Amino acid sequence: MAHDVLRIVACGSVDDGKSTLIGRLLAEAGRVPDDERAALARASATHGTRGDDIDYALLLDGLDAEREQGITIDVAWRHLETARRRFLIADCPGHVQYTRNMATGASRADLAIVLVDATRGLLPQTLRHTAIAGLFGIRHVLLAVNKMDRVGHDRAVFEAIAAAYRAHAAKLGITGVTAIPLAAASGENVATPAATMPWYDGPTVLEHLHNVDVPQRGAQLPARLPVQVVLRGHGGERWLAGTLASGTLRVGDALSVQPAGVAATVAALHRAGVAATVAHAGDAISVRLAEDVDAARGDVLSAAAVPLAVSDQFGADLLWFDTAPLLPGRRYLIKLGTRVLGARIGEIRHLSDPESLQPLAAKRLQANDIGEVTLSLDAMAAFAPYAEEPVLGAFVLADPLTNATVGAGMIRHGLRRADNIHWQLLDVDRDARAALKGQHPRCVWFTGLSGAGKSTIANLVERGLLARGCHTYLLDGDNVRHGLNRNLGFTDEDRVENLRRVAHVAKLMTDAGLIVLVSFISPFRSERRSARELFAEGEFIEVFVDTPMAEAERRDVKGLYAKARRGELPHFTGIDSAYEPPEHAELVLDTMAEPPERLAERVIAMLLD
Image 1 (cartoon, rainbow, N blue to C red):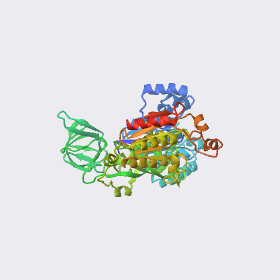
Image 2: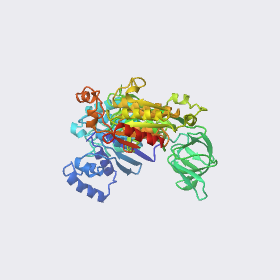
Image 3: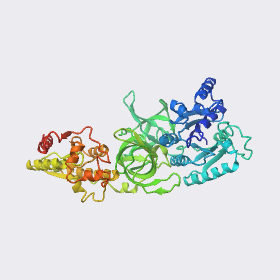
Image 4: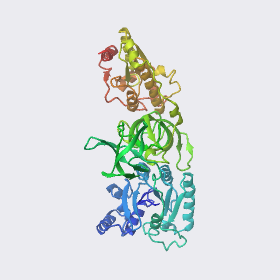
């Protein structure tokens, strides 16, 4: 059964004619009001590329920058309604740097219109957009081979492009490809058959969109409600509100509150704020449970007979957006359904080449790369494979420092190893060990440039603490690399892993009741923040050993700066690898103002205060 609304994403490479095609569709369907047509005529005279003719692309390119450059930058959404069907169309940009905008349009689409310029054939961005459409589960593609007038309406050109595209799409699992030759600017095969191509006897673009049958996702799945917000009724009762992701929900249905797995029953149901007895996928609803159970934003109410899987580790496909590369081991925020958690990329299994579709070895993902990765979450979460349930199988990653969205992914499956590992409860805990030692466990994290004086000050601090009867351990960057981290180099990826391991070792040591001193350059704020988040409030003390670059280089008895400047020591912090100074360190030590002994006493005073 077809959708009430067919959601379409129009994509392809730059200047293939996406905006022109959609604009022409709107005009041919009689959905451009007279006042908008008059405004379009004026805009065409100023910004158009069709001479005296109307430039229908300007109906979609609404930003001044888009009209001035003749390109699409942002996603333009247009609603089209005919006597036979309603459409919501996303016109997506073709430039590589706006790939994230294309992913936005594809994320909820049922069908993709992929534009190809007949004079240029299949381009890298055409194949990249097709790969993204495949990742987002789109299985119906209208291949619009545009600008056929510029190749003399040559049937052989069209058939060669269509055959090559079908073969490529089939490897992505996209088997529903309908190819249509057209000239969008003049309207040929857009809404009416083109007399210029008598050899083509298939549907026009509009005819195909009217007739294509795309089954509704989620309609046949069990009921699943991601809780978005908890509301209070007039009598104080709790209502769990959200959008029903899939299935049908009725009053009296048995549910499981996940990830905890607590049983509950639907006592009452509101749909769009009105009392109801039943709700369907896509409805905005609120539910009151018969039982007084702990349920909050981020939980999922699922049919008790068919509960969701629960895990804290996944295998997933990931589309990376950010200009800063994705590094395994670095911590991000993940939004899965309505749940937000900390997450790390465990490994990059491979990078997918959108042109050859071959898996490639990779240690990082750059902007617009697509890769298969593993993720580890801070806590358990309910999920479904994306192929089964897009709402609960799709996620976005955000930078925890800026909250900027840096990637979008689709869960393939939970990792089996997550089901076999459980916390072992122990009788002796951190507090007992600390009480035995008569001290408060702390992690003191010294950060600064190479040669800043971190190890010197940390060593003096440990001597001073030992003299006062404290139990300590000093983790020094160079020393740790002789053993635990011997297999790591100095690339950004290895630095991230180096600090991840050390942070967890420091955490174990504080659990043992020790005061741990960590002396590492630790150049990245994100890794220092990740280390901090392992510890309880007040247990992590960041100490910035502040030394100017020139002074650190002058003190360098090992000659590392000189080697780095000669190019003999790549990835050296401060020379060809960035150092990000702390913004909110608990203590800043100015090594130009005071000697190391006095600076060490300041640290000791803070610890023993």
